Length: 287
Image (cartoon, helix red, strand yellow):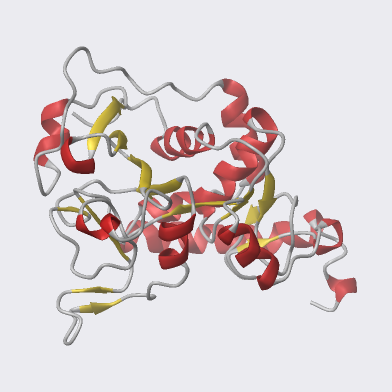
């Protein structure tokens, strides 16, 4: 059974992601879901976070996901500037957190954002490992989210290991960088199962254990006892998310085909009418 209709799955996922963040760390993401969850956490749950939307915009800016001006439009005059050296220093000293959206994640938390199929002759070429090797060898908390829980994304073994999980991958690395949490449209998972395998931590309302198992590429470990339901967004959570993303760019990540195309055009037209009124200084900064 899917998530109950009166809930917006994007707001459930973003709120759940936000509630995982804590401490005096730099939080970054290149996706709408990751940036909005960091913004929500900073506002309501973890005031000591330093939120990075993009290296160019710097820290502690309010994200506004956009289409026409890159992933996020931010007021750069309010940001605290950072260099890439600053960001890597934060990674190597375990003062960095990021929500990663892998194309595949397997039963031990190995992740793939490199290719689908054999690396020598892939069916699909993806963005490449980017910073995941550093994250999965240096951070004490590593967070993942998948918006469509299916046997194509939740797999027994990844086609290419972009980021190290548990098991053999972890033996030579030590505990730093091991996967901590996975949030999907069905529930919340950790890696406390046998041998560091994926285990169900909570179910989103309206979702069953049977659905989780049928939409996974392996048998997910289910602890004994009653399975808790994921805590729902509050009215304040929802207000913060909607205020930060009034054009609903985040919802594009949940769509495909004609529905996504129609939504894209609608957002694009609204965006053209909104951006200059919202950010009147953009023209003065030479953009």
